[in-house]
Length: 344
Image 1 (tube, rainbow, N blue to C red):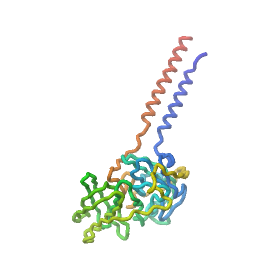
Image 2: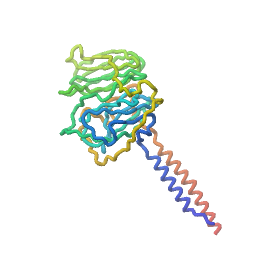
Image 3: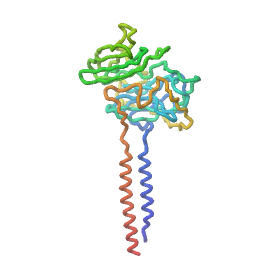
C-alpha cells in the first residue's frame, strides 16, 4: 500500500498553527495570573459614577506592589492606584470616576515583583457614567491606600504649594532618587502626591519649589512605618516642609493581607469575562491632572526603579520548535515520496 505524503504535510501545518496560537497570549485573566489577584467590585459590566471603592485581592509570590489601571477601547492605560502591601479580600483602591471621560473601560491589575518585572491581569469591564459636561480636573480622594509595608518604610510625598516641586533624597546605604510633582491646583484641597518605599535608615535631601530656595531636610525611616512629607512653599514660613509620621490606613475587617502570608491565603476569584470595548469612548487628548499614562504612572518605586519589563515572550521558542517539526515531518514525507518513486 502506497503512503500519502499529503497527510504528513497537513499534520505539520496543523501543528504549526497550534503552536503559533499558543504563543500569542499577552494578557491573562485575573484567575490565571498566579497567587490571589482579582477584583470583586465593581462587578463585570457594572455602571459606576462618583467615588468608587475597588475591592478584591492582590497577593502573590515575591510581592513588591500592585497597580490598578483603566484601559479604554483605544489609547494608553490610565493609572488609578498603587499600593505597596498585599490585600486579601479587602479594599484595593478608591478613585473618583468624575476625573475620567464617560465610557467603557477594562480594569487591569499589574502585579510587580521585587525585580521590577510585572504581570498584568484582566479585571472586570466597567462603564463610567457621570452626569457632567466634562471631567473634573482634580479628584476628591487620594486613590492609593497606605497600608503598613512588610519590609520597608512607606513614604507619601505631597506638593501642597502653588508651584512645581523638585525633590531628592539619599541615604548612606545608597538608596536614592529624584522626584517631580506638579503644583497644587487652585480651588481644590487635593495635593499632587507620590508614594514610594525606602530601606530603613537616615535620609537627607532637598525640596525645591519652582522659583524658590531649596529647603534642606533629614528624617529617619523605620521598617513598617508610614511617613508623610508635605511641601507647602516658601510662603508657609516655618511650615515650608513638614515631615510627619502617620498611622497606616485601616484595612477592611475581611482583609487578611496584613496577618497571613499571601501564598497561604485562599480567596475565590469571581468570574470576569472581558467584554469587547468596541463602543468605548476614548479619553480626550488633554487628560485631567489626576490621570497618568501607564508608561509614566503617578507613583513609582524608589527601591527598585520600575523598568517596565514584562514577561519574556515564548514566541521565538515556539517558532523554532515549529520549524524543527516541519523539517522532521517534511523530510519524512520527501523520503516516502522518493521511495514510492523507486518502487514504481
